[in-house]
Amino acid sequence: MLESSLSSSSMSRNAGLGVAKMMILATCVSALSPIAPAVGRNIHTHSHQTLNLNLHQSHGFSRTFTTKSKSKLWSQSISEVDSEDPIIVNGEQNAADGNDDEIIAELQISGSTPETGSKMKRFKAALPGISRKEKNSDNGSEQKSSSLQLGDEIDRNILGSSLPSMLNMAVVPLVNSVDTFWVSRLGITLALAGQAAANQAFFSLFFLVSFLPTITAPMVAQAVGSGDMDEARDKVCEALFLAIVLGAIGTIMLVGFPRTSLSLVLAKNAPAMEYAVPYVRFRSLSMIAALVSSTGFAAYRGLLNTVTPLKVSLATNLVNLVADPLFIFGIPKLGLIPAISGLGVGGAAIATAGAETMAGLIYIRLLIRKKLVKISSMFKPPSLKSLKNIVQAGSAMLLFQLTLNIAFLTAARRVQAMDPTGVSAAAYGIVMQIYSVGVVCHLGIKATAATLIPSERTRKGDDAARLMADKLFVWGSIVGVLLGSAQLALLPVLIPMYTKDAAVRSAIQIPAIISSLLHFVNGPLFAGEGVMVGLGTFKALTSCTVFGAGIMVSCICSPLGRSLNGVLMSLAAFNSCQALAMIFYHLKMGPLSRKRKKKENSEVLSSVALKIE
Picture (cartoon, rainbow, N blue to C red):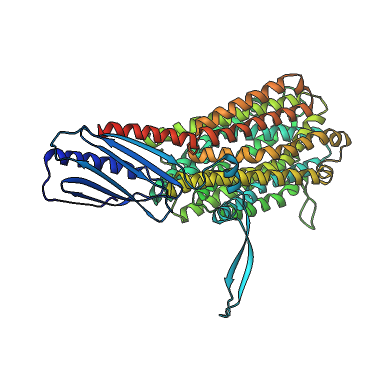
C-alpha cells in the first residue's frame, strides 16, 4: 500500500493538477512491480515540485519512465539494485509559470526477473541439484552433521506431491493387470480379447465424463490457496452432483445396451462379443462410484494431500486382488460348505466393481469429515452461474476427452478387426496394460502440475508459477526416461507373466518395445498438459490434442495401420506431436511465457499513457 505525505507552503491549482497526474503515474509504476508494491512515497512542493518514490524491486529488473509537459521535461531513471534495496525515483517540474500543463507519460520496462535469459539458462536453472545440508548435533555439542539433499524447496514440493499420486494411480492399472493375468489363466484367447474390448468401451465412456475431476482439482486448489474454504466446498459438491447424474446415464447405457457401446470397438458378430458383454455389464455397475472416487481424489489433490488417496486406493484394490480369483474360478468345496462355481470373465468385472464401490463410499465419508461435503448439497443442482463456469471449462475438456476417445477407439477397432483368432487383439490388450502402468506415473506428474501451478500462482504470482512449471517439465522428462528404461529392461520378465500363448507372445515383442520408448516423450507431454489444466487454458489444450489425434487417426487409417506395429507407431506420432506442442506453448504462447508477458506489459503501458493524458 502506498503511503504519502504532502506539505506545501504555496501551491497553485495548476501545479496541484500536475502533481496529481504524477501520483497516478507513480501508482501505475508501482502496480507493475512483479514482487512487491511501492512502500513509500513523499511529495514535497516549493518553488519546484519534487516527487520521491521508494520502490522495493526484484533484482535484475530496471525501469525507466519519462513525463513531458509544455514547460519542462521530467525524466526519471531507475537503475538495477539488489532485491532488498529501495529504488529512489526523483523528478522535478517547474510549476511557477502557472500554465495548465498536460502531462504525457512514457513508461518503459526493461530487464527481467532472476530466471531471465536464454531457454538453456532456464533449463539449467530448473534442473534439480544435489546439495549438502548441515545441521547441529542433537546432543548440544558444536559438532555438525551433514546430509545430502536433492533439489531445492520447489523440487521437494513437487516430489512430495507427485510420488503419492503416482503410486495411487499406478495401483489401478496394476490391479487391472492382475485381472488380465487371471483371465489369461482361463486359457481362452477370445476371453482376453473380449476383456480388452469391454475395458476400452467402459473407459471411453468413463473418461468422457471424467472432465469433472479434471477441472475440480485446480478449482479447489485456487480456492484453498486464497483461503476460501466455503468456495472449495461448493466446487466439490457441485462436481459430485454432476458426477452422480452423468454416472447414472453411463450406467444405463452400458448395462441396458452393452452391444451398442461395444460396437464402437467390436464388429457386431465378432467372436469376442460373447465374453465382452457380461464383462462390461458387471463392470459398469460401479460407474457412479468410480466417478465419485475420482472427484474425491481430485478434491484431496486440491488440498495438496496425496497421501490419503493413496491409502484409500491400496485398501480397496487389495480387496480386488483377493476377490479376483474367487469370482473367476469359484470356491472349492470346504467340508460341509458346497463348492461355488466361478463366473469366468464376468467374475473379474464384479470384483473390480465391488472395490470401486467401496472406494466411492470411503471418499464420501472422508470428505464429510473434512467438511468439504454436505449430504444435502450432493443432491442439490448447482446454480446457473456455477453451472455456466463448469460448462465453460468443462466443454473444452469434454472435447479433449472426446478427441482422445475417438483416437483410441479407432486404434482398438482396427486391431480387433486384424484377425478372427483374436491374437492381435489380445497382444494389443496386454501391451496397453503394460504401457498404462507407466502412463499413470505420468498422470501423477500431470495431477501435481494441475494443483501446484494454480496454488503457486495465487500465492506468489506468475514468476513463481513459471519457475514451478519449468521444474515440472524437467521432472516429467526425468520420470519418462526412468520409466521407459525400466519397461525395456523388464519386458523379458513381464511378457511371459501375461500369457502362455506363443503366438500372442510373438505378436507382443515389437509393440512392447515401441510402447517403452513412448515414455521418453510422455514426460514433457503430461507435464505440459498438467500446467495447462492448472492455468485453465483448456481451449488451447484441446486444440493441441485435436491436432495430434488427427495425425494418429490418419496414420491408423493409412496402410501403416494394417499391422499392430503400425498402430503403435501411430500412437508414437500422436504423442511426439503433443509433446512438441506442449513445450512450444509453454515457452512462446502460454500465460507464463515471457513473450506474452512482455505483450501484456506493453498493453498496460498504453493504458497508463491514456490515463495520464
